[in-house]
View: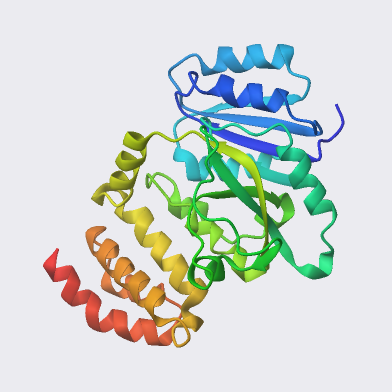
Length: 299
């Protein structure tokens, strides 16, 4: 087969019961110049047999890889290394796409000029009942940073879309430091988009998010669990090192994330000098040197 224009990555762990939903929605796409890259993150169910069955009947390229469990974050970057497409979309193992999803995203990208400095096309999600998840964008298109999306326009709710593989690969991460550390929030790499360019946001639905109220509450509770302290501390630190220059124009989010960094670094039992030195802002370094030793004694 020729090199596909798009790579759709699905990390999967014991999701044989939901992967058929993903596959069926990909089969129905009006744009078919994509590959589906499935990385099995140590599943013990019949995921391998299932995907091999998909490969026999699919009218698009499917690649399957098995690995020992590494969690979603590191699996994402393995998928990025394996991606053949110019464009890249991560798709969860329990989601689905409307039939025109890939067509909308690729057509949008193809009409964006290089001088607009766009790093990601961001779109709306809806649940399985047809309800928009969260807020629509205040205008279409909206060109903005992730920071402004959240703190200037106050847009809430899951968004989804497509980036360029080459842009994802510009992100600077030491994956060796993150290996074996459990859950790592996606913000650890997503915030870096704002160092490179802008999001191009449109009010079209390209992802169906199957929501379960009980699961959502469970995941929300688990997100800030102490066992995730390492990943949460990394997430807050990345936010601060990306946006610390905004402390005077937008002090509240910086202060909140500084507090989060102090809290979860202490729970993670990090060394005081490392916690301070890992910050790029001199002001935040001073605040960390003052407050972190006190907070650490409390844990």
